[in-house]
Amino acid sequence: MSVVETELPRGHYRFTHAARMEWIKLASLRSTMWALLATVAGMIAIGVVTMANTKAPGPDRVDTFDPVNNVLAGTALGQVIVGVLGVLVITGEYSSGTIRATLAAIPDRPLLLAAKAGVLGGVTLAVGEAVTFVTFLAGRSALTDAVPRPALGDPGVLRALLLSGVYLALVGLIGLGLGTIVRHTALAVGLLVGVLYGVPAVLAGLTGVTVAKFFPTMIAANSLAVSKPVSGCLSPWTGFAMLCLYVAAVLGAGARLLARRDV
Image (cartoon, rainbow, N blue to C red; front, side, top):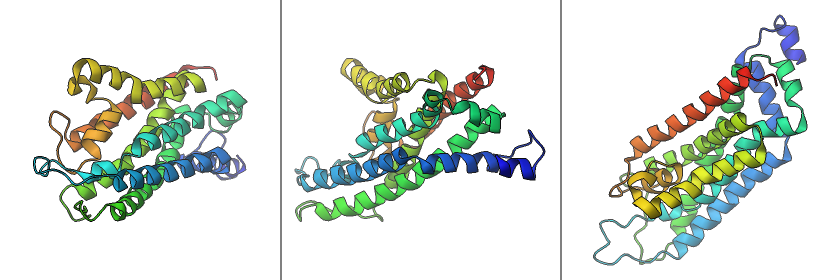
């Protein structure tokens, strides 16, 4: 607050001021560190265990065998932790009442939401990329000698790792958008879990991948975190574009509602 007031006239705030404030708030919360540590530990553990139990493919599965998809299995856990963290970035302020102080410091609400998205996205992207590469290296070493070991130079492997890290950041932003729209932690988390797990599971049971392939978890499992194409599913870059549309839709709706509300 003092930095903004001494450097600029009252009401004239830049993105950097808002982002600095959001970074201080995010970094000072113990829940942030615990959530990110749980994401890292959970994804690495699941990836190593999955790879250690991966069996050599039979002759009829050699062409479609993709251990990269196995090593990134922990993304299913990491996404919900990061998504909930995204929800809490905004709903935590509403539940504690500190949103009033935040809006008093940064009255430009679209700018405030952009700063929250920028800081959250940057942190979760850095963690997401780091954990996917560490998980890949650790999981690769856990494979038995009978299973072909994937390498970063193999076709599609580097792209799968990079997009999987990006995916975690995008899910965090989806959580932020849902939290901004509903302003209630439990409801926003329920919506997030429904979008990630409930709805695609029901649709997969009813229609196969025809409709379910357009939902985030299915995109991650069958489009982003694979080095070989999966029949009937979106291509990696089409899936990535679909996720960007999700983020733009929820953050856009959240920004409009935030601008119209009294608090």
